[in-house]
Length: 213
Image (cartoon, rainbow, N blue to C red):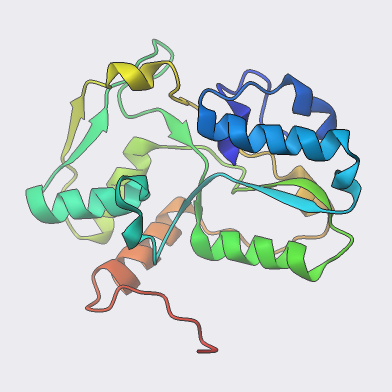
């Protein structure tokens, strides 16, 4: 998980030599990080692949409740209220809504995962992301555009319990998977959101169904 990188001060590289320096901000990230360290210390990273997914969004996430992506949450808010609420910034380094994440479309995440699965020589800890950080303002604006609505964002206070564990910046370093030979084009945020909204969320059946089923 990208949550293992904490506040990002140690960077977002999947280089194994940096694993011991990472400091996750919450128990979720810590639980993933502890397993990575266990695999490293026991010499398993030469024989296994551990994938660190950044902010994945796309069809079939509808059962996840509050853990759904911001794309789906924004779509639902726009549908019901005509606006989207975003957290105000908790840092002087970022304006409201300009906190950034590496948002990756589930179709791209699956393609990258299958690349690793299909190539046994690809091993170790591997980031799954786009390599490009985009703001929540960008994301929400793309949802509004895909729904043919005017942008309407309300900034609200961040809950106190989140402030100490909130990641203002994430951006996967995907150098490793590219060096292993991954060559597929990765969707831009706008391309991905347009596909998700227009071909799934606005359709009577919003589910992505396997072509082999």
